[in-house]
Image 1 (tube, rainbow, N blue to C red):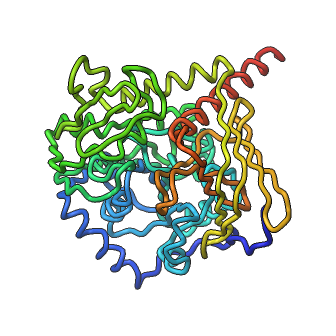
Image 2 (cartoon, rainbow, N blue to C red):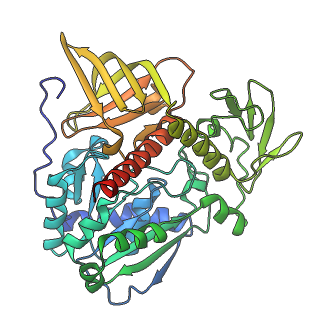
Length: 419
């Protein structure tokens, strides 16, 4: 625990969404849903009534508005990261939000989810715990299956299509996409949640939460005419497939280019990439992203992955404001994350082992301070800004996921050997 701050109270029992706020939630949600001509496709949910759990994919703030429309006229309790409460903690609690720190194992969160279920309401959970980087599914925690067994209620999914295309994480803003879609589907009955084993529940969830916004865009002939549609894409596509250089990619208007070899790609109105000259290595953006993952995985498997840098650190102990902790040092390698620094004369060291983090949250130019990694423990949410230019928070996020997978494989091998 860094510093002597009042911490966010995660023990507070969740409130049922106040009746007087429900019309305001709907009034804020429906205009956005209507403006994008969102079609909500319902499958198997006839007669579905609270309490139940709804699992949603996560690409943009619009997700919350579509969710409110999908479950109308019922209310929900929403699991929200602590930074969301910066808007207004009183308001967030009274519209039914349950606070959490990303990628932590919180007993208080589980208790509050069970309390919300016992109140007879819907619990809305975004298991990816962060916006998708390129409009495809992210890693899911295996703990979701255990939670579902504990709840013993029906499970539905809400998979939104087009939200990343409309407002990509690497360049936020509303691009005015019409004809968005959302699939509201019953995934598990209450009986199935009680009888199916946890691994099977997790597999059903993983299969249900597969999506690809760029493939959806092309299939539905959704054209983005914004001349700056590629700006920021280099944050995700940080490695050049032509020369292999990392951290040399840039973007401007509708083009992506490498500062090392000079190769350029144009992003079409249908969200595909075309080489300005020469062959097109990856026309589908998620394919480029997965190629980067394969390269990171190779480093992890070879035991050569390593990153270190001086950093600036902000702490969010509560929902009031960030606290500047000054400079520190971040190391990320085969042993996980280590953050060291000093605050008000007291040195600190925080560690996150590979097994403890199945993923991490990153931000691009957060609050105009730069790209950052968001690491959490029960007491702190730390926004960590590496200095310099020779790094990519996207690569750090990919490495976090691959290190976790390697740790789990090693654990299984050890368990098998001990039998």
